[in-house]
Image 1 (tube, one colour):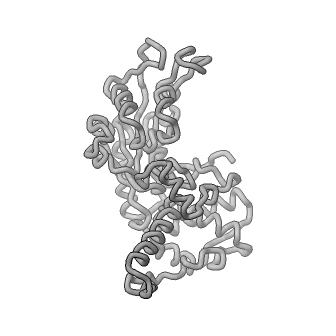
Image 2 (image 1 turned 90 degrees about the vertical axis):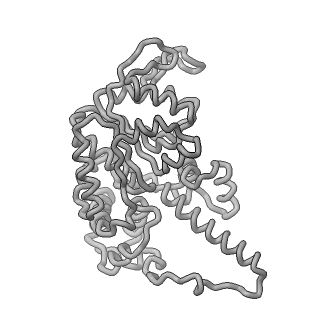
Amino acid sequence: MSSVFDPRALLKLNSPAMHAVYAKIKSVADTRTTVLFLGETGTGKGVATRLLHELSQRRSGPFVNFYCGSVPDSLLESELFGHERGAFTGAYKRHLGKFETAKNGTLFLDEIGTISLASQTKLLKVLQERTFQRVGGEQEIEADVRIIAATNHDLQELCNQGSFRRDLFYRLNVFPIFLPPLRERKEDIPTLAEYFLVRLNAFYGKCIQRLQAGVVSALVDYAWPGNIRELENLIERAYLLEQSREIGPQSLPAELFDRRQPSLTEMPVDITQPLANVRTAAVQQAELTYLRCLLAANQGRIDRSAAQAGVSVRQLYNLMHKYHLYKETFKDNPDRPSQESSFSA
């Protein structure tokens, strides 16, 4: 399905937190200033980036989205700057990189915190000099693009750890915009749920008219560790299960309506077991819950999940094997509406 999402629909969210975000986007949109979107996975950074592009003087130019974590470091330079024919084995023809295809438009570098130090150095050079060369080429090409980056990492902390160049951080952090998590702007939940329902009706044609009041209340009360992406996925599952004209509790997980959160003293504990055994069981339960939420929020994407968890891909796979978790369980339905047209970036 082709994308029909208008990023200006983001302006319909009425929480004070989002109004502050809009004000910053509008104030910087018509400049060439580099913008850095910050926030947890699934808070809407990708859609906010598109809105900034649509409000800018470059709106008639291309918007190129490049997810930095999806390309091996050995190929990153070629993907960003392009390469000439014969530059390396397999380079059978000239390839234009993202900086060229985004000419006169906007280049969105998503999850910038995942690139290596070597790639950071090359990117810094382009941001400083506003020119680049294709791999295997000698011609200096002007980088006539607006750079917008996004990350769910604390880049300042990565700088302190030595895994992110501080000078690149300063180049990217000219105008930071923080996207607050959904749990801090619950006023937006009913509007988002209604938006997803409208989109699903347009795609699937079931004509479900509304969510029951009790369902809306349960959605507002929930903490949403996976943010907007988790809300979108839950609404879609409920939509597919629902047989009536309104989504009711029967189409949603029962635990969503169990609003009373047990305290630590109320958690069941087997005091016949040694403390070490109880501690191990508690840690395992915490790991399992964390992994489920993490994989759901990232739609089963292993590289993103590992980066967010601060572990290697191999370590994440080992944990998934330990708890019998499979990435396919958390992937989107391939027949669902395009991710590109959702709030969930």
